[in-house]
Length: 518
Image 1 (cartoon, rainbow, N blue to C red):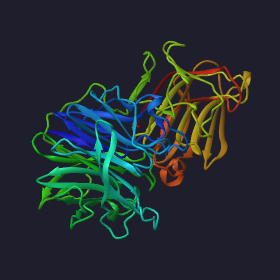
Image 2 (spheres, helix red, strand yellow; image 1 turned 45 degrees about the vertical axis):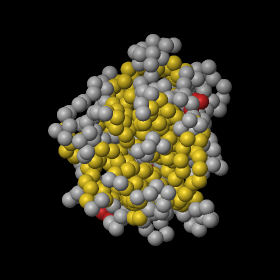
Image 3 (cartoon, rainbow, N blue to C red; image 1 turned 180 degrees about the vertical axis):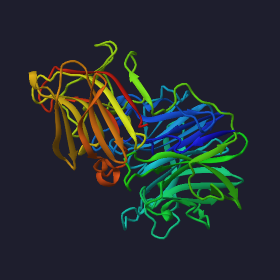
Image 4 (tube, helix red, strand yellow; image 1 turned 45 degrees about the horizontal axis):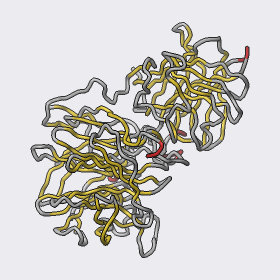
């Protein structure tokens, strides 16, 4: 017996998809414009998870640009005959595509694009029938014309695994459970006891999010909805409930026939979400031929009792950690914006440190800045970082940033030049920049610490173990999904820029630590 603690993946890990192979479970999640794309996790007990890499780990697989909430939407992972398939949508380039691998750790193949005209819409999934044939299921705009925002339908078509192209006719099989439903999305097909089951989300990924299910004896036939639809939602629990936005689920069974579901949901603080949408787990029972999620409870719980022997990993998806830079490999938890390659960083130029190159690109613009971030995982947390940076002029900066998107972030950066070197605290809210604090600096490594609690922060300089407050009562509400928009959660990371000017400077980091406030 082991206990899973919800969320099982803390921080911005939305749209989870899960599959099992033998004793092993695998989860993938949306990554949008962050790179590498589609983080992949492994577990043997559904409670402890280790990140084993990213599915899209090179630029040829991940051409993404634009808003941070563009890029990679809603991946699905499936395994068939020893081959793993990950299918997803790149809304920045190429639409729906598939990659495959014989080992979930990779390497994964180059993308097989299905074609914008042949395969419209988003949120694709794959289903392997008993005869080995493969089918695509996805969501697309109403082909008779979109009557209102979110007027979409769920459709199915066979996929030829040899050509990796859709074949035969496509057919709409379901619209959604509620009259004039909006955004039927995240569809997945399963087969059980002679029925094809279609599990999907509807109502949008915010306050009205819900999970519904339909079934049919035939795949190419209009499905019938469960009389209890939607079968799961938190929208009836009110805005002050500690877990909101629940939906977008994927079912999995264990070797003993027990069923579970992973889904996204959010944990708000002061009615605002900084963490994005996280991955939660629930049990599933079957009654009268339909799934029941968390029977007798009907909502997500903090803990889930599981009938597995506990199987922790040495390197789990932890939050309390100090990351040093003694390796030549960058930790998989670090993500860049659009790309993450040695155009922006080096682990060998200054051994024992991470060097970021001071480039013209800046966080206030869409593009590929010199930024490497880690996901924020709670509301009571601290980030401590050792920064060594000497600006060559007044335009250059380097330090740490709490980042929601290019128009909304909080920078704690070293600026100035010569004897005028100082730590600057700068807010960017809805594109408007404002410097809220300065503090003079000595030479050498500067230790910066951000302490956050309940959507409010204080920024410190740490000198000889003495904490010097630079900025107090910094409001973090502007860096939430409700205020900033989009589909992502905050990351916190290391950054440098010359703000549009040419530069050959660099900023080095001795460590970065993140963890819960005690």
